[in-house]
Structures are given as C-alpha cells and as structure tokens.
Length: 63
Image (cartoon, rainbow, N blue to C red):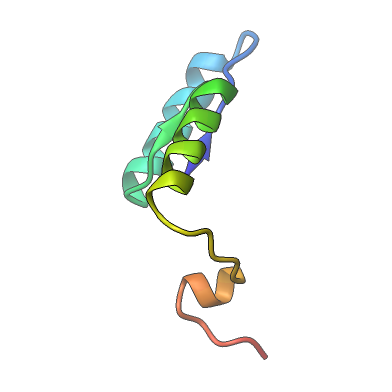
C-alpha cells in the first residue's frame, strides 16, 4: 500500500512517481491519510490482523 499526500510545487511529479511504483507492485495508492485510514479499517473488519516481518511477507528467510 502506498500513501501519498501531495503538497507543494513538485506534488504532481511526486504523484506520478508514486502511482508508477504502485502499479508496478500491484498495490493501492492512497493520496490522503483519511483514505488510508478508511482502507485500513475496512481491511481489519474483513479479516484478522497478522503481524509478520517484511522478509516473511515477501517469502524471504531471515538470517
């Protein structure tokens, strides 16, 4: 999940970069914190929260 709050003169360029990264990784792009909060709360209601490391999430072993 990518969350981005566009602000300032370079906001348009930043948004294009973030959108490209989200598309390449097949992840959602949220441009406001309130949208991110709503999306997160909706996901929590849909299934139980599980805590895991990034290595576990992406299938890499920890060393």
